[in-house]
Image 1 (spheres, rainbow, N blue to C red):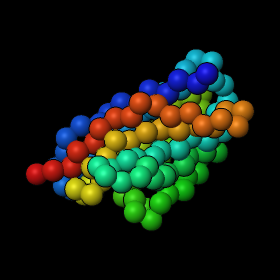
Image 2: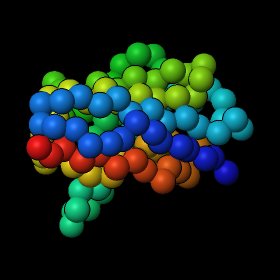
Image 3: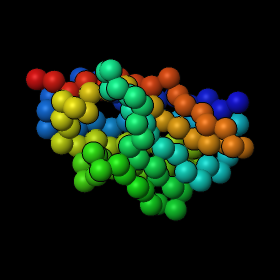
Image 4: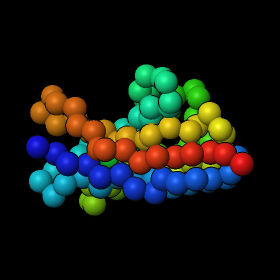
Length: 115
C-alpha cells in the first residue's frame, strides 16, 4: 500500500503563485514518475501533469506554460510550481503514482484562486 501526502495548498489571488508538494510513503523506492490531478467544483477529476525521474514533464494544455512539475526521486517527492494562477485553477489537487499496476492517490490539497 502506497501512501501519498500532499501539502502547500491555500488561498491566493489571481496572478499569484503556489508550490505544492507530495511525499510518498517510505515503502516506495525508485519511483519513475508521478502525476498531478485536480478536481474542480462540479467537474470530473482531470490529469494536469506528469513528471519523470529523468527530469522531463508533460502537461495538460490548460496549465502548460504556467505550471512546472518536478520529481525528486531520491526523496520520493513530486512538486508542482503553479504560477499565473487563475480563478479556474480553483480545485482540490491530488498527486498520483502507479505501483504494480495499481493507481494510488493522496487525499488532496485545496487550492483557491480568488480576489
